Amino acid sequence: MATSKRRPAAFQQDPRLIRTDDSWLHLPNRWGIPVDICAGTDVPIESSAIDEILTVLATADTLERLGAVTGHTEAAISRVVLTPDLHKGAGIPIGTVLQTRGALLPQAVGNDINCGMRLETTSLTADQVRPRLDALERRLRHLFFEGGRRIALSGLQREALLRDGLPGLLGAGVPERADGIWSALRPGDAQPGRIHGSRYPTTNADAFRDWIHSAGGTSFDSIIGSVGGGNHFAELQYVSAVHDRQAAHGWGFSLGQVVLMVHSGSLSLGHQANASGLDQARAAWPGGVPLPDNRIIPLMTDGRSAPARRRYLDAFGNAANFAVGNRFFLSLMLRAGLAAECGELSADLVYDAPHNLLWQHDDGQVVHRKGATPAGGYAEAAGGPYAMWGEPVIVPGSMGAASYVLRGHGSPRTLASACHGAGRRVRRGAAAQAGDAELDAFLRDFRVVTPLDHRDPAVTRRSDVMAAWRRDLKQEAPWVYKDIGPVVSSLRRAGVAEPVVELRPLLTVKG
Image (tube, rainbow, N blue to C red; front, side, top):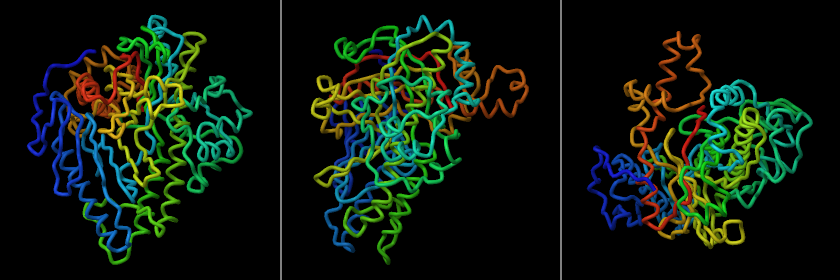
C-alpha cells in the first residue's frame, strides 16, 4: 500500500492531545468522557476540530440539567471516537462517532441523513473504457445534468421508497414509462444483504407528502438521481492494486476491473428531516430551562418526549430510505452511460454503506455517526455475505486520488466505526482563493464531468462563469484533502480495518 512519508508542514500536535501510541490520541476533558482519536503521527488534526469537539462535550452539562428537570437522570454522553479524517464541521466535527445513553442528538447526524457510499463491480476493464472517455464525458453530462436520466416515479413508488427503502421501491414495480434510467435495471439489483440497512423503519411518510404527490400520477422530478454538492460524486474507477487476495476474490474484484463508486445522500429531504428533528427537540424542551450555549439540543428518550421523537424518527427514516434509492439510481446512470458507449456490461453490488446515521440499541445506548462509516467485524457481519470477512469499509480519496476498500474488524475502541474518507486539510473558503496554476495542471491530467462544459467556446468566453466554475473545483481539488495513504495506514495499524483493494479514478462526475 502506498503511503506518504511527508509530514504536512502545517501539522503540529495540539498540546491538549495525549498520544497513547503510534495510532491513537486521547483528549482529556473536564467531563471525564472517553474521547479517543484514531490517527497516526503523519495524519494532521485541526486544532479548530478539537475546539469544536470540546464544545460538543458540554452537552453533558445540558443532559444533566434536563435530567434534573425531567427525572431522566441516566441521560449522558458515554463515549466519543474521532476518526482519522476528523475536521471541523457545522457544530459537530466531521468524523465524529458519539455514543449517548437516554438521548438522541439530531445534530450528531447532521443535515445529509444517510449520506453514504455505493460500490459496484463491472464486467468491463480500464483498457476497454479509456479509449471511450471523451464520448463518455458527453454521455454522462447529458444523463446527469441535461435531462437524460428521466427517472419516472409514481406517488405509490415514492411513498414505498420513503417508508420501506429500496426493497419497497422495487417491490412497487417498474413504472409503465420505463424508458430512461429504469432500462438499466437488472434482476437482483436490490441485494438487501449488501446494503447496510436496506430499509429504515417508519410509520408514515407524512413529512414528505409534497414530494410524494409532486405532479400527480407517474412523473419525473429534479431531486431523485442528483449527485448533490460539496464532496459528493459519482466516479468510474478501476482496481489498481490488490492487498488481500482472498477477500478481493470473494468480493468479485480483479486487477484492471472497472468499478462504479457513488457518494451521495438524502439531498433536500435530509435537510428537511434534520430541521424537523431540531423543531421537535425545541418543542419538547422544558419551559423555564435556558437553551444550551452550544445550540446542541438533545431529544430525551423518556416517555414525555416520545411523540416528538417519533415524528423526528419517521422523517429521519424517510430521508435515510430515500438516500439508498438515490445512490441506486446514480449507479444505474453510470451503468447506462457505460453501456451506451462501451457495450453491454454486468454490474454487481459490493456494498452500500451509510455515513450520517444513528443506531438505537436494546441497552439504551445510541450510536451517532457523522462523517464516519460502520466497520463491523465477523460478529456484525454474521449471517450475511461477508460473515467470513467482516463488513466492507469504503474509504474514498479526494477527486483524482486513490480510494480503498477495506474489511472491518468490529473494533470496540472505535465503536466498530471507520473514517468515511481522507478528510479536509484546507477549509472551503481558503481553498477557493488558491491560485490557478495547480488547478490547470490537475485538469490537464484528469477528467471531471460537471454541469458546465469548460471546453465549450461559448462557455470559455464568459469569464464570470468560468471563474465561478474554477472556484467550485478548487474547493474539492486533491490538495485540499489529507493524503489517503496515512489515513488508511492508521486504520490498519489500529486494528480498525484491513485494506482489500486500492482503486484509481478514470473519471469523476461532480454536481
